[in-house]
Image 1 (cartoon, rainbow, N blue to C red):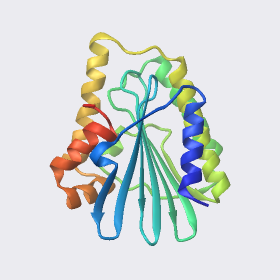
Image 2 (cartoon, rainbow, N blue to C red; image 1 turned 135 degrees about the horizontal axis):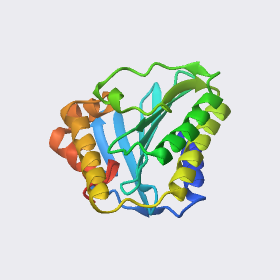
Image 3 (tube, rainbow, N blue to C red; image 1 turned 45 degrees about the vertical axis):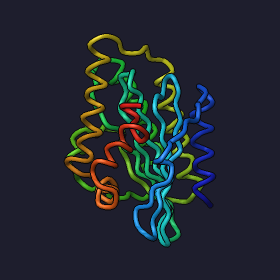
Image 4 (tube, helix red, strand yellow; image 1 turned 120 degrees about the horizontal axis):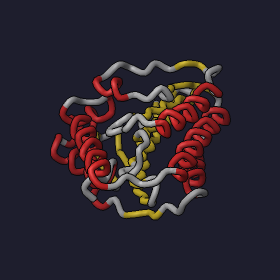
Length: 225
């Protein structure tokens, strides 16, 4: 099994509801983190899902595909998926961040829909989600599981499909609500560097905070693209 198949499944699932336009990641398309670790990013844009970044890293013992979806203009959580192949098993961490969220009736109904997906796969083996400053922003739908390739891959498809279905129904934010949302997303992006994160710390140590901030702003979150 390969990250290529996971990537294809993710793009096909998101692309069936709206077209994803691939953009250039420029100088950030390939980042050398150390002699054994290179990060490769592909960047997409769509009306509803907003900024979509797929980040691949490979080492001798672990291959990871990170999928970061940042819908700036909609009242939904930010979505971050880490799909990991390590030591013969598949692990997937699904994080929904309630960043700049208005907790109205639609939000509650949409959260329930995402929780239903998580519950569908509750029988898979749990994978520890380490406590961090951003844990306070976690939606109840967050989960981390390990299992066989087909099942974990289907869990990814189900989450992405539900998320895109929710976005499809929503009207965009406007006015002050939109500005507050954009500000909250920028603050979240900045805090990942200033306060730290498990993966972010690796990038900062290798590339420096300034370059990682530019990468986040232009590619990973796309807040200033």
